[in-house]
Length: 251
Ligand code: PEP
Image (cartoon, rainbow, N blue to C red; front, side, top):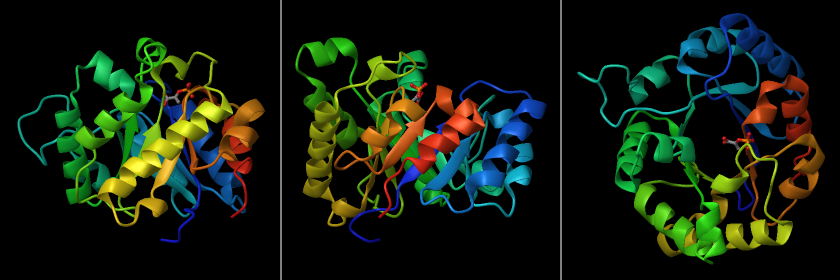
């Protein structure tokens, strides 16, 4: 991978969408994806992965899961294994999202085990890390994300096989974003932390996530060490998601 990675814009649909609107959204994104510089990815809820995967077939838009279990198969009612996602055509899986760390009590060790399972299945984990507002107010943001990165990114990850997404918890779904200087400083810190462990640190994609909208995408995506975005709410409207994707700077 070259030193400046191609940007990735990933849509996290979360627990939204019925079959009809999921298909319409996927088709609208797919039909406009050609010619966009950034790599595009949509991560629908598990119920829609099969149908959306079929709708995206032959397009430039990838399919991703929102979570996976750490085991490859077995007695885990309600869970989905990484090989099952791969079998459906997924390329990526979001892991360690703050809504899972907080809402499902996921520890760094569990997220790391899930990331190992994803890598073993040939999936690219999109590993989410980010501080809460209280942690930021206490001046702990850098330490928190470094700890999360160290705890949940497997040693065998490479720039080609894993993605890191910085998502300040207080920014997700709130309409509030850090200043550009804060994003640049945090992403620079993450790049330096990666460089302590990985020879190809410069090639890792570092996504920013948290209230990315068409109105703020150009400046956020042009910030140093930001190599794309993880988009929640705005990924549910094709035109907003595509506007964000088009806002990525050309390499
Ligand atoms: C997210 O949940 O990953 C996210 C970034 O959400 P939003 O864009 O809605 O803040």
